[in-house]
Image (cartoon, rainbow over all chains, first blue to last red):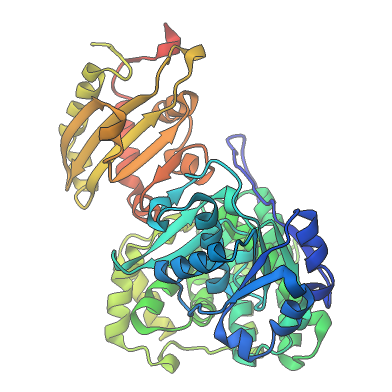
Length: 392
Length: 141
């Protein structure tokens, strides 16, 4: 990608990464000690408890785990955070360990703020309002998709406002993320495929965002390479721990990429169809991704073509000698093929989405903040509707 | 053409007039609702001895109050943007894109980030119109 002399950006990636099979039990205590902490509240969800994923970790902590807050739903809210913070405060927690996916991680991020700052979470809606480091947070992700373990954004639902609020705080980036591929071995095929495609979408959209920059590109390109190679292997053999680990790393790298460069049209549309028709986020990202890529290439958008040509190389379907537009189109085709290879859903109608739903979602998409970062300007909801119809 | 000292009521009035007279602004900002408080941190080395509090209010393409105010009034803003003097000057002179400044942590925002991001055209137009006001900055003196 060519950047010109006007390039100016900030790349922020402070989270320490500890990777390895079994690391969630072998490394956690020493990471806590390194932070000078000894009173951990574990934040997780009922599904993780039921699957037995948190058991060994909590046992390893022994009396350093002073409580487990597992009351986190799929879409977290301010009320959940308040309960979690009260739970942690009553027990004198000095560190939060989250074990789970995006909702658990976001809940934990917000609990950390309330433990340090007190008050109401709604007071922290915005960007960079904090002036000091927050209660330390170690993330142990159990999915390989959201990348939330390395971002400093938390999204929670505010019932009073009837909408989600965004809290963006560099002081609240997790101190460490322990990536243990063993924790993703039990991820069922649909979740493996869809969270993997969420990660792929993060990487590709970071590269085509108007906020794109070279360091985020580097993370994104490697994430794309790893996902295209190892995600199919995870679906072929869910017990392939090497493949699981590489996909986990890819999701983290994609998290760094989009955490710095943002996302675009795919996420605007995925958020919207998720709100209207409850299509799971990763599923809608995967289904919409190739159609949005095709839209961005358009008749012949030169910047998009150059970037997708680079993505095609990372996907292994092009070389630098290929004509860029041909390569860009090959990237789109390859994403369609990848979806089929990993058994990912291919249509929104397969999740019950109807024409009436996409009419509402098209309106919502135009109001979603992510859309402004899209490489190709979206002039109106008719363009969004056309993409939804292709994906229906 | 008149010249105004930055952060004065006269300067704000001139800026407000530019916005009010702009048909393009009215069209771009037809959906914007709410006030934006701008807080400039003190920087004595740049002739800004005390924090500066500005309250600007917008409603569906119209401009309402534009006030040099106190901290209490500024804190009533629907959106509150805070930054160092150097950053504000860069934004006002379009040397630094306002949205990038927010996303890069060079300016702080209290309020709904998503609303601000999806109305970025409104913000950019307001800043464009500020560049049409001949301004003397504190450290230009």
